[in-house]
Image 1 (cartoon, one colour):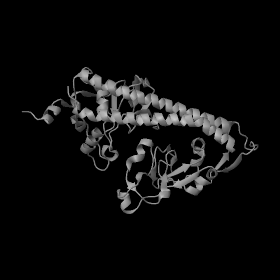
Image 2 (cartoon, rainbow, N blue to C red):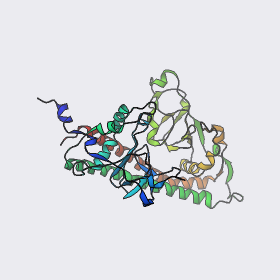
Image 3 (cartoon, rainbow, N blue to C red):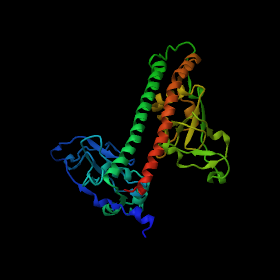
Image 4 (cartoon, helix red, strand yellow):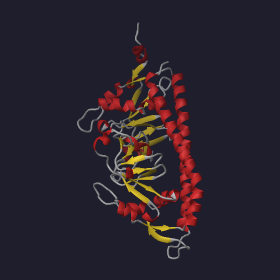
Length: 382
């Protein structure tokens, strides 16, 4: 009698059985659009310096083909791989292998891309990566990685379910962006474009950021509390984007002044992500990589920081390890409106920020659902 595990694995096949390498060069410079490949498994506009480069040697990638990087997989703990979906053709660096599915009636490119998006795939690729410190993945080892390949109808069903979730996330994200642009436009109209700094309206003044906000710098937890002992709340230690904040979810009970509250602006003050910022969705302990900025008029504060971010970053010090300190932030010069206009802006902007909040939380739940669907691919059966 066959075991359940054997039955589940019986429909696993090697990737190499279903794909083939493609190497089409840009002869005659026919294709102009140049793409790069991000570690988040997406195509992005290339930022490479192509002055003097032989663009005829770049590879052409076409719709429903994949590009990947097998270099530095172990170091980055991810294998960058992406499926070209939105355009018919582009060019990409010759350093990236390009491959395609041999028979789309046997394996859907979108289904294969779903497998590549699983965190388990990255862990397996990292395990097989060799080549010293950087840890590259040999092409043969990549081809030997396995995945379950159910009947094509089942693949279509899974892809449709996944795309339904992803499309909803994309629509929400587009709405969030429009709402953020609307809030920013209102702020600029009220507080920037109509204002003559030499002739401010009654009750307005030039002051400092600390005149309209409270800034709490984070603090690294110490001792046993850092290792999760005791009651407390999750630690935010340095942002890349909102979903990346929670890499370190320890509990700690040190200085209660080092907490942020829901709605505070969390602003990164150290490292390569200095200046990145998000709005806290709950109470968190804040580590030394960030600060929490709050105000009576929080919507105004958020837009003020966004509008002046370029100027704020001019005060960042340290070329090797950029940082900005509390005093510098507190003394940043700002134009401060009177209480009447600050109140009116808050009343106008609050419904916008609340809808952004609702859609952001919805996307968080949808992303969790998407990840659950990806995790279930390992046990999919015909």
